[in-house]
Structure formats: structure tokens, C-alpha cells
Image (cartoon, rainbow, N blue to C red; front, top):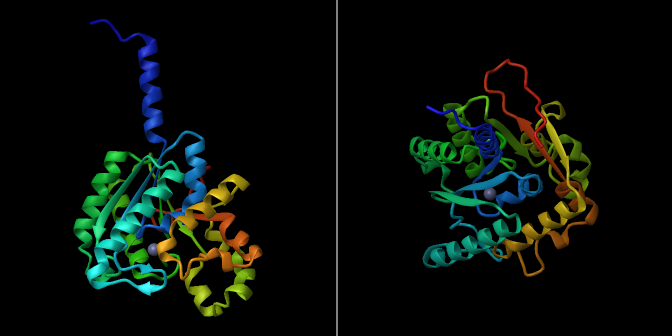
Length: 265
Ligand SMILES: [Zn+2]
């Protein structure tokens, strides 16, 4: 049998390499992806395929500050799905998937099924980098913590040297100076932050990435308390502090093993 010509082998290898350049974010609700909007934008710019897997359809979210439950549930799902698609279009995300878990009912989730479903989606995508919430869910939201647990379990099942898992973290301690504006009690901040030495990667967004991130936040008008939008009310200094940086903690698959710091992007 004739060997494949070199050029064939090379292009095949290039294809495999590209296939592994995937960033997949696993979050709980349509709008959570803003946490990693800068990373998603940057990954796309340098040629990664990007994917978002969303745990719920967000059917128990707010509609302009009101609880939007009961009969109108379907409408909210339609609205949030449209917002999610719009956000993903801005970020040029390659695929969106839902796990269809009940929103705001993490205690009722079938974790076994959810892990299995996520595992098969991840194997299909073949992500090189997976990003999800940290163990506090960023803000102690039970759905966020549930998604963290599901993602860690699925990751452990598929883990290989080709995959890296990172936890996006919302309030690391270097942002503690923002507390004056946030007015969150220190004990709560302590609960939802991680130690500085646990942060593996801090990404400072470029101006374009920052603007894109604000546009992504702006898409989710159904979740705004009023028509002026959430972030218009934030002092610029605070907004920049919170949105211009993204922090990621590398997951250590074996306890007591030194955390491997990789050059993510
Ligand atoms: Zn959320």
C-alpha cells in the first residue's frame, strides 16, 4: 500500500490541532456567559472554536425586575433564548447547547443524568479548555454551584492531558477595594472569593473586548431592574474594575498535586 503523501499527513495533523483548540463555557443561565465574555472574544480572535453550554433555560428569571413565573413562563424562555442567541452572535460563539435543567431548582436536578449529558456533549465538542463557575458559584447561587459540581464530575470522567478546566471567579480579593461601592459585608465577600494565590490567570480585557462585554451585558434587558439597565447605574470605576478583568482558577484534578499553571491564551 502506498503511504500517504506528506502533505496529507500535515494537513491531517493541522486539522487535529485545530479541533483541540476549543473553548467551552458551562454556565447555568442565559446571561452568565458575560463572566467569560472577554475570554470567549479573545479565544475567537486567535482562532479557537467557542461553545457555550447552558444548564437551564432561565424560565424563573426576572422580567424587568418582576418575578415572572406561572402562565407567562414560556414567554420568558422565548425572550431569554433570543437574548442568549443575540449575545452568542456578538461573541461569535460556534455552538449553544442547553442541558434543560429546571431553573432555580438545583436541589431537584438529576445530577447523574446531567453529568452523563454534559459528558457526551463535551466528548463531542472535544474542548481543550473548559470554563465554569468556581466552587462558590461566583455568588453562592445554588444553580451556579450545581453547574460547578456537574462540570467537575463530567471533567473527571473525560479528563486527559488534552483538557484543562478553569473556574471563572467574580470577586477575587484583588477587587476588595470595590467593596465600598458594592457594600457587601466582608463575611459575604470572604465566602464568595478565592485567595489571591489560587488565581491562575488574570486577563485584562482590551478596550474592544471590554466594549463587547458591556454589549453582551446590555443584551439581557429582560433581566434588568428597569429600562436604564443594570450597569448604567454603576460608577464607571467600579464597572471597569469588575468587567475589565477576568480571573480564572485552574482545577487541580488530584488533591495535593501542584497546580499546573498553563499559558491559557
Ligand atoms: Zn446565573
